[in-house]
Length: 255
Length: 255
Image (cartoon, rainbow over all chains, first blue to last red; front, side, top):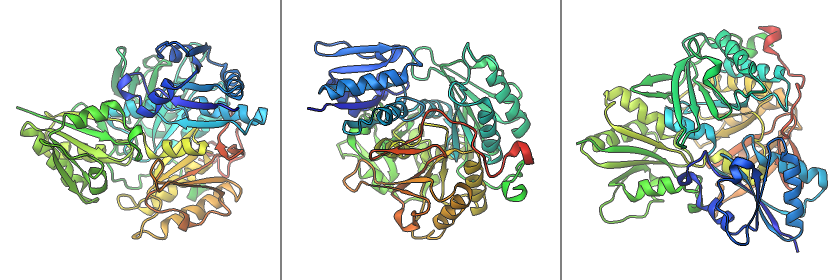
């Protein structure tokens, strides 16, 4: 008998942003695995085993989930936001590849990802073409982060940054802001959205000239506008129309 | 007395992917406005007025919503997916700016956007840094689409394309595929995800060499992998780690 592994997105924090699909999976689970603060969001009940683990243990957690499913258990791995955006879905497929366990019934259950919850609070800053970039350099070189920031800026994409800053990486985000100031100029709009939909929610709208690294921590999503992004009242939004602005570098011209 | 306008995301199609927050807003609405097929998803009830309109009427719909709210009505504009991703939130703020009605109580209620529902069905193709690009050239020049495609490819982003192809734009998507073949090579993985979570759902996994424009229509989201994206079993996923691959053009080198 083979069980099932679902990877479920809990959304940014508020119960009202968890989909019924995810709630149903949790109600039917025998085991819930995840990073400690995410598992803490799951109500205990008889018949449900909660397995909380530290971050940076994603691959071990994914292997444990496959093991439990192979024993016939109904397993849910919980992620904050959406499981497919800088979260546990990729780790699970790495574990599937490493173990060869392609026979397990796997379901990915989407959730409201942090950048879209943050964008909704700010207005519509991601209403035009945009990039999502994980600024953590735990799993990729800082040079790749810089490379992508420059291409995103020169393509005039709006941007959303996950994991902008942590105690172990105090300097990378300052460097990212510096690159953006070089590429986009000082007036570009920036939104710092911390812990959206929780009691600790805090939103700040500023410009690249005024943005400081200390405005972000690991619970913050940072949104950067494109060259057309503007304010109306207390809101920030990207108009639906765009023209070709003069980019700092055009790949058709200089390749 | 001033009412309220909420812009609510209905998710990709299935009821179980509508958040409780959105369901509560719909239950409390006096008026629901939106594109005809989205309003058709709302159950009629006494006291609720449904206002369905054609697409390309976004700005008129947004102004009508502000007018109704100014009369004290509780208005919900419905979008498919997430309202902040190529949907009605930007149009509403354009109407706020045009009318000067910054006094209206506005709430943006996020939803499961199509690319994340599609990614969940395919595995985790957006598990690393990615771009979301609207391939429609209704509101931006085709040259800007091409410019962004090249920067996204040279930044080695995974990509998600909305509105890849319609009857009125039969050729643009073929051109986009040609650009991607030039930039990424023939082996790059591509997912065509049509009408995810509905009875018409259809998923196809292929490569740039095999991808054909006819595989997409307006109900399809197209996902393109980065240089590390791989298959395991029937799944497609982006590993969490990445290295700097040799890009066709490096902006640090040729700016």
